[in-house]
View 1 (cartoon, rainbow, N blue to C red):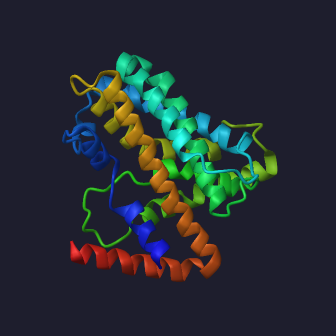
View 2: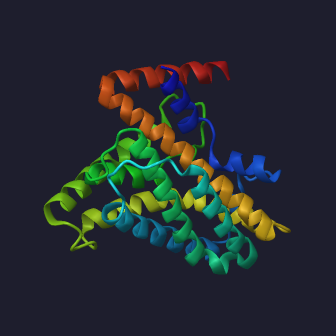
Length: 259
């Protein structure tokens, strides 16, 4: 119950925008929606490219073997790459974002292994990729349903079909509609967070130091989401999805009633 309560907090109550506000001292909540249309196109393309690269990495190079949780080291690398984004601005995004995303994916994979996931199984590897679609926040935080389980439900069919396709046919045809649909669904939600990241880095006087702070918040956000996500999956394996969902919803309702 304690682990599940932490997962509810990680998955439902602290979005990326609030992390940026805490890190930078600026109100970032709505900046992602203020990115100009021409820049939004660049962000969307960069986000989809990053998720496509992460998809290939998830299914080709993530080790199923147990390894230490190098969360601090991954934070350091992602933070360093943020100095590039801060120093060179939007021009660096097509290079910096895929690199940061792969660093985050490897950190997510370490968290998954620590929670008992077998990354030799395509479904488990894709659960790592799924983290990038979670924790994007919602318009109405008082809504009764869980945003976490809502997104999982939306992605469930695509994840299942993609995992089945990879088991049967491998990665020979990455342009198949099954794969393209999953990448697009995840990239769309990932783009919300990327837009907030770009908006924060566009704040005047951010520079390289500000870019590093933004990337620190960026990877910290997804590490926290991953920890909550794989805690829920671990508990589902131990106790069954129905009881975990029921207790999750009860804890979420209690928390929102207090607020």
